[in-house]
Image 1 (cartoon, rainbow, N blue to C red):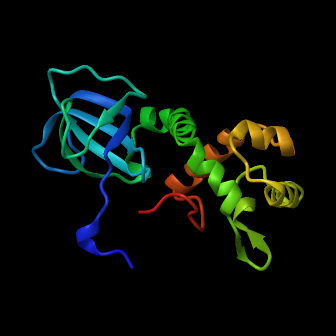
Image 2: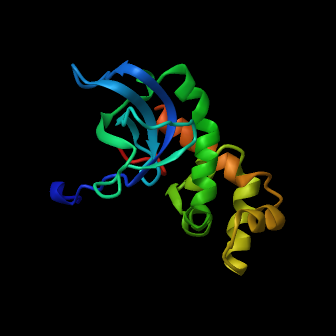
Amino acid sequence: MPQMHNKKYEEFAYVLDYRPNSRSSLIKGRDGTIIQAIGLDRLTLLELLGNDDEKFSITEKLSIGKDGRSKILSVLGKLSYDTLTTESRTSIPDILELIVADNESHYVNYFNNSHAVTPRLHSLEMIPGIGKTFLSQILKERENRPFTSFSDISDRIKLKEPAQLIAKRLIEEISGDAKLNLFVRN
């Protein structure tokens, strides 16, 4: 059971969209460079207040932790998917692929360690493109030896672009389209 004082904050976030001379959608009276971003570890959608003297770019990785935060003045709060700008929604797929690639070992371990959710449904089947056939191949191959990379998964079971499939699943979870979240914790 998580305790409130152990709350985990994002240390890094990727810029989805930024608007100079804009208003916060979360905090009345806060204006300046408003940034919509997605956190690296917990995939939290965030609104940030950027330093007006700084330049920002979409897909840029920012330090937003308590220490070493130079371009960001403050984290204004969490956003919901439906409050994102069109630009942010457009940026999400590419940025999620970057996040998945940056954390390859974490997601490859998911292929190695995931298990059944119900007697009829394995959590791997919740990833787009993985049905019963791929599931049985994955389970058989990981018994022989654990997967070491996305290319190892592709080579051994002929699953094309596993990183993109994970990114598609992440979009479903972030947008609220998934009934059960595998990766995103709110």
